[in-house]
Amino acid sequence: MKNKRLSLIMAAVVVLLLIPFIAMQFTNEVDWDVFDFLIMGILLTGTGLLCELVLRNVKTLTGRVLVCGAILIGLFLVWAELAVGIFGSPYAGS
Image 1: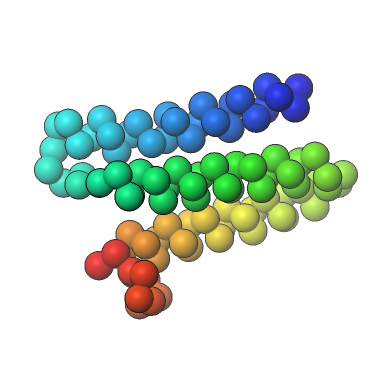
Image 2: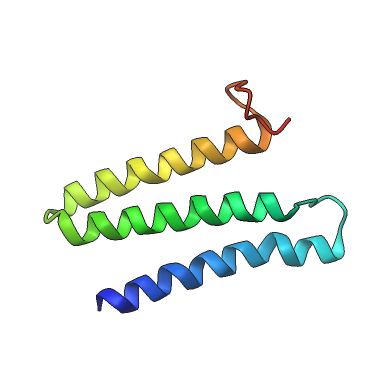
């Protein structure tokens, strides 16, 4: 079961990264380079592995939901900052 879940995480990362890759073939609106794919791959893989770690170590359902929810919120905040700079940091994409 544990290895199956890890395989699903890695497959989900690949599928999610295929979305902008395929979109780039049809429109100029999506303009990612290798660095963008690398950073997003790291973010998605790290998030998936952190959630897997939580699922293995946190025993209560409430704890799992809260910690995984916090991890996902962190992912979305970092993603939004890198994409459009909602916080105005030097790493902002805009």
